[in-house]
Image (tube, rainbow over all chains, first blue to last red; front, side, top):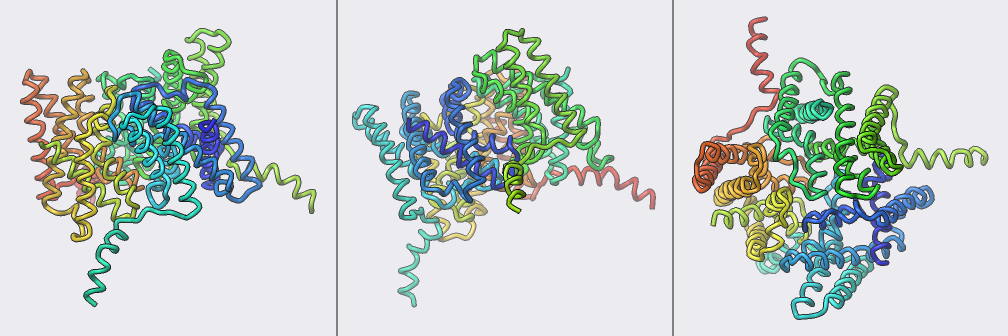
Length: 211
Length: 211
Length: 211
């Protein structure tokens, strides 16, 4: 269920970006589906599985629904990807994908870093892929507190299993941590600092003392 | 045979783009070979096979021939990638690669979407990869009626096998559909509409009524 | 040992680039780790293995050390990626990764081109991936004599094994050829010519004769 909401939301967000860049219809479909499925496909390739999306017809229907929604809605709304409904659905998708990535990685016997990396790639890889197709630096790496939520979710999953918790408990806590931090980030406008700001924070007191 | 023509044409087209961007010789070879082989390599990785190009020496010789041709010809011709011979060879390659992708996907037991997706990736993935290496948005996603031909070819392949046709018949019809639509697209300057034009077409009558 | 030096150097170089582009902390970590590990992960995916970095905790610690070093040092130095220590470590890493790629490719039974391709991808793929994340054309394809050293190293490895040499001898000569040519390229400012310069060199005498 969370997964289905996420697929529709991710495909919608990706398609809206492609519409804004005046891609043609195929381009819109490709960018939309890449946003929804590239993360999961990369996850499957990394653990040596044939990507689920190429085998199951159900998933792709949800992605195409998200793309259609984007084309229909973009005639009415100015920026449907900033709409509260989209933001909430996107946060749910981020949590669903981070959890799915953690479970697949743990089942494949990966290390702690492997779990966090695959959770993050599954959740944020689609958005990064879409940005590369649109020829801009992946926005999730630049300023937003977005992929960080998936990193945190993967870390929670690993911690819970490492201390002996059941996988279902780990999955629930991972999803909660991801959707919680992402919602808070949107509401309060959280951002990670750049190295320059970290440097400034460290250098500042010394400079003031000098004056 | 079609496959060989396609490899040479794709490597030529990719190399010419890299020459125009003033890449050095290694860059020209890398972009040329990526255009010819990245689609097929991605296809093989998706169905969990070691890429054919890394195992068979014959294929790579054709790719390197295309690169050499590009370097030799670009001293004489202004834009060898717009030459009719190149356009025809490129259309043949598109058809050969879409067909090869469909067959591999069907043999791997993928769903209908899986067949269309792998046919398209095999045919258009190399060009998209080259564009990313050249740091521009994949041109095949922007304005041209190019990848759409491979989508159509993959769809034809799946339809024929779904109604019980033999794989050889499906392959022949897939190749014919791809090369036919691509030739028509070049001759008549076909383009897919953008979402803006679709929106305009839908809104237009209403607006005129209002006046 | 060489591998460890290379991981730290690659992570450092990648992180410094991300710091300069004012990425946030997660972005710096992602670009740094991608520079260090994307080449090796691609190598493993191509030969159908689960990437080593997702399974072994030791490797990732070295990468994170390189990232921390970059953040710490960039407050003090202007451009730590041009520092002689970095350049030497980077050349050692290039050699270690080209050698590791050659060995993995040979063990997987790839063709001569497969060995050269996997050696080059393992050595230069991380840097190319980082440049794509930073939204610029891969610098290694543009002007520098960098990936060419890995191509040469892979060629040396294949030649030595093809004439019956032991794998350990091939590995040693591959590493020596890579680090040697890279050091010479840095010291003497080597560059590969572009197709334009090759064309000019060929056309020049004819033009002068005409005057």
